[in-house]
Each structure stands twice: as structure tokens, then as C-alpha cells.
Length: 348
Image (spheres, rainbow, N blue to C red):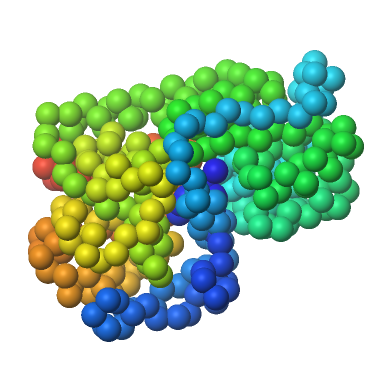
């Protein structure tokens, strides 16, 4: 959940979820206690978003931010001539892209966390991002398996390759990775035109939003991906890219880690003017939004707290690197620079 997700995957995701320290994320029922001993409101972590946190955690140990390249199996040369007819997707962001390219009818299996579009949830499950089920994959007789790069699962990938199953391992860390992933899937699955159209649509939307905020001062932004403890999106992530496009400056943009942990003291020092959280952290209801604001109310010197600029975002729109980033980028820009969007548009 490569991804806050689909994430970071955020369904991390996006795409990435992992057990909290000493706890099972599926219950997600523990209250969070701040540095000043104040009990924070309970945060629910539905099963559907566990994938994003896992992929984010995969990025924690990484100090480098070099872009990854797609990895193909040795069986690729033999399978190049014929487009696949039976595809297994091992990540929510990949599944969403494959369906958006018009390849949904060819999808015969998905990960446990793939639930968008709704048709994807009806496909046979092949395990989670932490524990892919090799036997389940093999039983589906796929001619293409698409996954995210993950050294932890190299034995799984190796087993599939040894059986002659074509494997694509496609990174999704950055916006550039997203473009490359869409293009590669399009090429390998015979959907080049649809892939080009998807990339064009994303690029045009990013350019449109970027032009609206181009002449406005960059506002310092913190994007929360985990509250217990506090983790944020850093350099080398598609979320960092989105913040920049939307007219913000990521307070963790100089971090050596993709998803660094910050202390409250560091947050106070970096003084974010806008704070984003997602439905990974709190349900986006009126009461939950008030609770999210309450979490930070003890730190009134932070500009975002003082000015009431703490915004909840739909996780799927900003933590799954895929076509719905076209929605997420505008939601972020409207929150960072509301003055760039006429009120009539704000109400639409």
C-alpha cells in the first residue's frame, strides 16, 4: 500500500496497511493518548483500509527515494504476443486501474482488500498484502499476475514465476510511478489506448488545478497517514507530489523517509498551516470531524489549529494511486487555497 493508497492505498493504501505495534488493526478500538496525557478519540480502522497502512509501513525503513522500475518475470518473453485473458491483481490500486482500463472481465482474482469498483469485491480472493495465498492464485490459472514490489513476498513471486506464470511487479510510490504503471499494464494487457487516455486525463486535471494555485503562496501542509503513533507522508511519495500540485509545501518534504514519524514537538516547530487526515484515521462524519479537531485543540499555537484548517479527505481519493486522484487533487487544492475556487464551485 507501493500504496496510504490504493497507498497509501492511506486503502494508504494507498494499498498499504499493517498491524499497529502490539495490536491487530482489524479491531482498531484503542484510544490514543497524546504527549500531554490527553486521551484522544477512538479511531476505527476498517478491514477495507488495512492494505494502505501496510504499504506505507513498507516504506518506513527506506531512506532512499530513487524511483523503482517495473519488474517482469522471465516468462514475459514467451507471453508477449498474446494479451492475457485471466488476470490476478494483488493490490487495491492495481485492481482499480485494471478495471478502469476496461479489463474488468479478465480479472479472475483479487487481494482480500480489493473492493473498488464494486464488481472487484465479487472476484475470488487470493489473500492479503501481508499473506498472499499462492495456492489460491495458482488455482485460478492466471496468465498474468500484477503485484507491488515487495521483497517480503519474493518467495511467493518466485514460486509463480517457476510455474511459468507471467508476473508484473509495478511500483506506485510517486505520480511518475503511477503513469509508468498505467502505461505498462496497458501495453501488457492490450489496452494501450485506454491507458494513454487515463494518463492524459490525470495530467490534464493536475495541470488545471496547478494553474489555479500557481501564483499563490505555498502553504505548509501536514498529511497524516497514521495517528498512533503519528506518521505523515514525506518525500518520494505520490501524496507529496499531490501536495505540491495543490499549492502546498509538505512539512515532511525534506525527510529521508517516505513516511516518517513525527513528534508533537516537531509538528509545533514545523508549524503546518493546513492539516489533512483521511477516513483511515476518522470516519468522515460531523461528529468524527469534531473529534479530529479536538485531537489537536491542545496545540493551539499550530497555525492550522489556530485557524481551523484541519480537513478530512476521503481516503480512496488521495491514498490510492489511480484514476480517482483526479478527484482527490481538487479536494486538496480547495482546502489549501479555497480562495482560488469561487464559492459557487465550492458548493457544487
